[in-house]
Picture 1 (cartoon, rainbow, N blue to C red):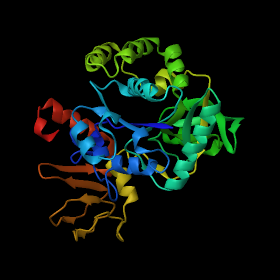
Picture 2: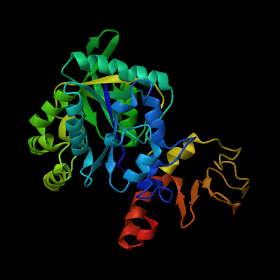
Picture 3: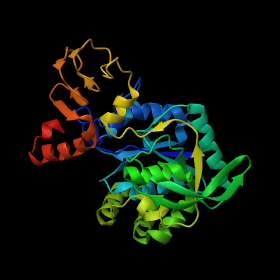
Picture 4: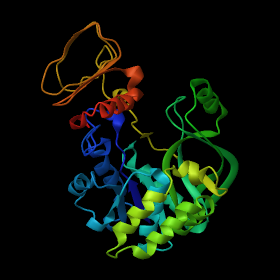
Length: 357
């Protein structure tokens, strides 16, 4: 089994702590260790370090190398520019195929919070068993615990496909992030799972599906393959990346393919999409404020996230507010608008405040 960790995201919803050189996945958002480090450590009992690859960009490359000294340097793959997950996974598949032409490939993001590590590894192992025997694309689905509107959903059928003790279900449809009423219907139906964005397949299978559904990308990957390990590798990858479309693997392949299965993951999973998700995970005081170790002084204030290291916050009458400070910036935002922090970062870009990015 080979692993491709996607670690090139900007993490703009976690500004001001998340910056271009050190985005969310390179930060210790919750608990000890960065999210990327915890992702690698979670996988290592299942997959040796030499079979774990990380794909990112040149800006984040130094931080990744520093944080993951256990990985061979050649296992850090650099994309010349962001082109969404289809190109990211395609480039990773071509590089992993050179190592193991018929290998089982696990693809997952670097910035998910997962507990129940043993159950997580068992789930990947079971998916790997099915992928090794069947020409299928497997995605890991999470049992919904509430009608989430921030996650995509997967609807599965009663058709089962098994290998040994592992069982997956044929996927009927993928659904984008729903509104609340639709999410409630999904939950009540019992045949929808959250889409975790974790995939397992044999490398020739995903390459065949890219060829069928994204021939333009496939042609670019065929151009890259013979240049791997040669002096012209970077130049050719850069040229191909200038030409290919920016599209997600979900739109480009998964929603079109006929051989998609979903395997239910019983582990706790959170993609930590915003500061509000962090608030929900942190311990709270009697007024539902998440303040960490700092002895902040809060009067008639409730439901707040306060991450202001090195000083005391004194506040009166605050409700459901996020306060996050770094050395050069202070974020004030209602928790209900946590997703809009990404729009704030776009405004910072337009005002050319590059030192804040």
